[in-house]
Image (cartoon, rainbow, N blue to C red; front, top):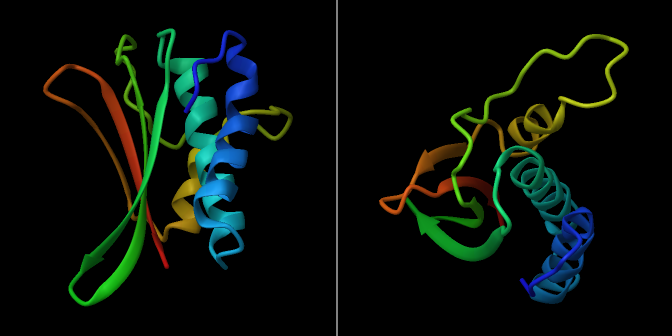
Length: 124
């Protein structure tokens, strides 16, 4: 992604970048939703001035997937986990959406450099 001063623009940039990367692929809409949610979480909770996103085709056990990864500086001690927002809360459902779209095939971990990485697998 390009360097952007206004971090609120990053989810939209993530959607545009994914469209540029995969064009009209049938998984585009789900990739855009997942990318937007993960970038939003990184911006809101990552505690840093930057966010990186990558998309790679992978093959595991003769199945083909997209691996969408979002990385932030890892300055927050909180581990990304789905939470149960109240019925009147307007936020807090993003990781449930990611979990649903990937059938639970997402993970989070710290890299050796201490950055927070969240990856999601989606069939291609």
